[in-house]
Amino acid sequence: PRLDASARAALQEAERRSLRRADRVLAAGAPVADAARALVPGATVHVCEPGVAPVFLQRRPRAAAGPGDGAPVTRLLTAAHLLPGKGHAHLVDILGDLRELAWHWHVVGDDGVEPALARALRERAGRAGIGSRITWHGALEQAELAGLMARCDLFVFPSLFEAYGTVLAEAAAAGMPVLSTRVGAAGDLVRHGVSGLLVEVGDWGGLAGHLRLLLLEPERLAALRGNADALPVRGWEDAFREFRAICEDTAAPG
Image (cartoon, rainbow, N blue to C red; front, side):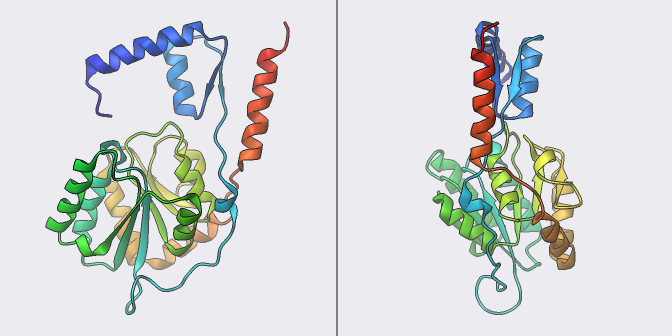
């Protein structure tokens, strides 16, 4: 999302040269496959989406209490490295406008890739008066993230671009309702209005409106969670099986 026009054009030309040399192309998600076909019409492109680790496929009992004692608090979770394209700053602003509601935001993601951005996000949250209502976990192991998913109520993903969105698959596998931008495979992983809610990239007003509604009407959030529990997500064994089949077909004579 941060590339200027000249840098984008140069990289697209490099991609085009590589794609032309390939007999077949494997893409991790439909957006990448569509981009490859657009660069090289007629290219043979296969989509082989990732799986999720077994730790996310476990159905864990949900904790009933929010952070601390007192009134119920809706626990929000975002898992994404702290990079500009992941949209954290927009969500900080949205939550600043929703500070009168009862929520706590858990943020998982490596804050050492762009430390200046990490500092800026904390400062932005402080200016918005919500610094004490955010827990910055940093990078977590998969088991730790899965445990946190079991303790949180809503997965919020304001990303600007994803090739697939593995963490969305992990959240869906863990039975979390999702509020996300329509990036990567979000449209397949989240059934809008059934297991979660989706907005177009850049529709921050829509994201804020959906979040406000879910915070004000917990029964809506509970309904989404019930439907999320029934969403099938495949593990890595199925992904490897599909990958192998594509490779064997590619290597077959004729």
